[in-house]
Image 1 (cartoon, helix red, strand yellow):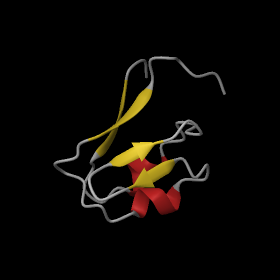
Image 2: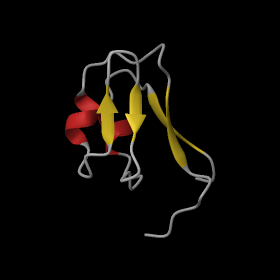
Image 3: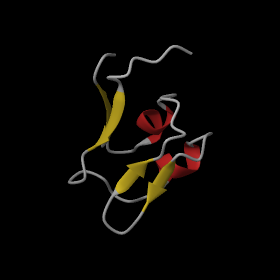
Length: 65
């Protein structure tokens, strides 16, 4: 997969419910949820599964596409 260096995922922390649905859906185990925020690790492949499973739409793609 060719990946634009500008592509990244962003979390709206005001919307995030800390439900963990995104963490459980990540095939690369690249999401980490702590008491304050959701973080994306270096292993993220931008598969967008986390975007699809977030019940409140708190995760979005920003950047090149």
